[in-house]
Image 1 (cartoon, rainbow, N blue to C red):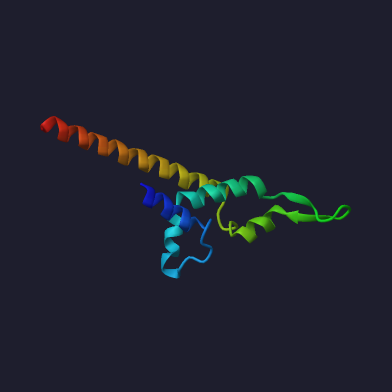
Image 2: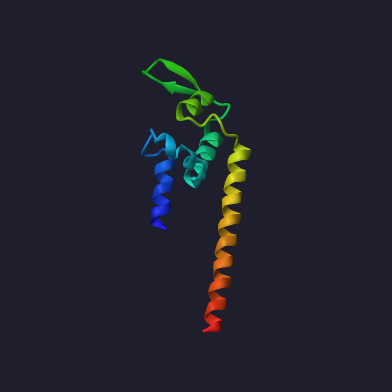
Length: 109
């Protein structure tokens, strides 16, 4: 359990920015990546932010620019939501199937 969780966090880009090219495909399997991208899309997509750089200067920063800087520009909110719902359904089905198998093996003993 912990090994899978740590692997997902590492591949999500929180700790390691330059994932080796032969592991890049695993980033798309990380639930943390999809959760982070969804949260960033909700927070920054199509917004203009006023950033106070000094006491009198304000700089306008676009939320889409922030998303591009974070590397989130490729996914839509619907896509991230769909992937997370699929994760939930698949993991619940796998857990249910395991519990059914486990209960049958205990009844047979």
